[in-house]
Image 1 (cartoon, one colour):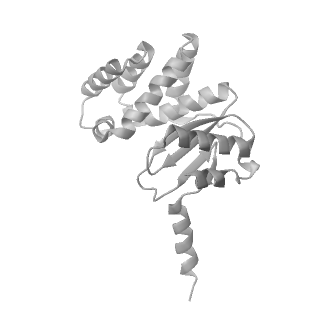
Image 2 (cartoon, rainbow, N blue to C red):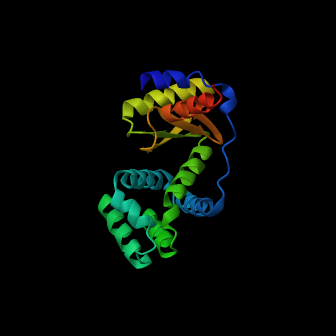
Image 3 (tube, rainbow, N blue to C red):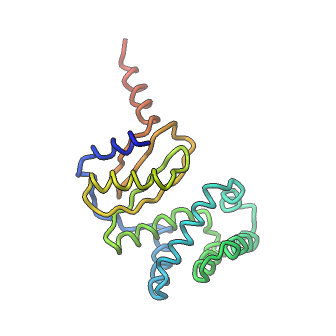
Length: 200
């Protein structure tokens, strides 16, 4: 992981791009939640809740299936999410918002809503959001190394949003704005396959 963090320091500064505006269905929901949280002076509380939801979704196959299943009624989805959020101590605004998302049958975009909300928050604070996917969950120390490497490379404040992608064979896939910073073994292997096609 230290070597991967070192690789990221070699990323050219051209990857800096303006924070993309959030768009589409998830963007509309995220913007609405952001405005509500901002008016309630609860941006940090809601962001903390959303990050916790993100972790719960990453760690639970059952939760991910429940969120995506069209066979489960909106009432059951809403009840399950409300129970989960209440148990986790989520802020009332977060619970109400997720309830609305469930009632509208839009839980399948919840992960994207969370990403868009955190992007809006980072934009408000003059930060760039780095989306980092790894084969296994990153430790706090590894996250700190990645943030330091990226900040050293792009010269700005970085907000890290990490996810787990079991399909990655090793390394990291990092995205800042619309630009990809890729140090994954999967991509290197793909490049090797493409190169070998021309051999012989």
